Length: 167
Image 1 (cartoon, one colour):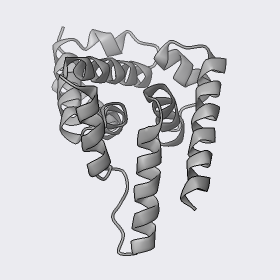
Image 2 (cartoon, rainbow, N blue to C red):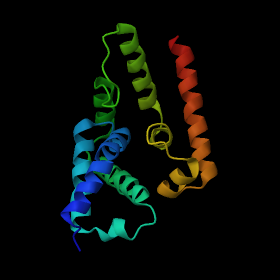
Image 3 (cartoon, rainbow, N blue to C red):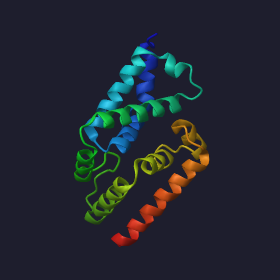
Image 4 (cartoon, helix red, strand yellow):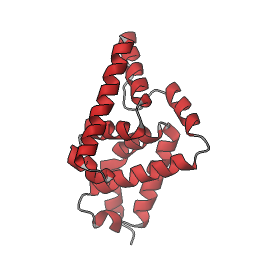
């Protein structure tokens, strides 16, 4: 059963930006992330029960977003092509700065995040930008809390190691 226009409007207002950022962190491609969010809301427009029956609508939104993003990546002809494009584009969540040193730092952070495996990058994104706890991330991704914590720790270790090589 399709949701009411009011429900769909609320879901879009509450989750579209976060879903886009998360899809972008998985796909590393602005246009593909936009397509994932479009597909997400088309899916929600067709069947609101998927969210209405959920214990946590936020968890459902991020689970659907992740699954749609991974499906989109599988459909792409080459994962390497996506990585090369990511290296050339600035991420949408960093605000451009007039300070050249700040821009360089942001570019280094972006490159460091891009170098992480998808599992670690997703966990870091959900924890840092979406402010989800490890237990909540585990439920969202279908992983034990310890695995989520380990992926977060390993990702941070890799980022720290890259920071030392950049300084």
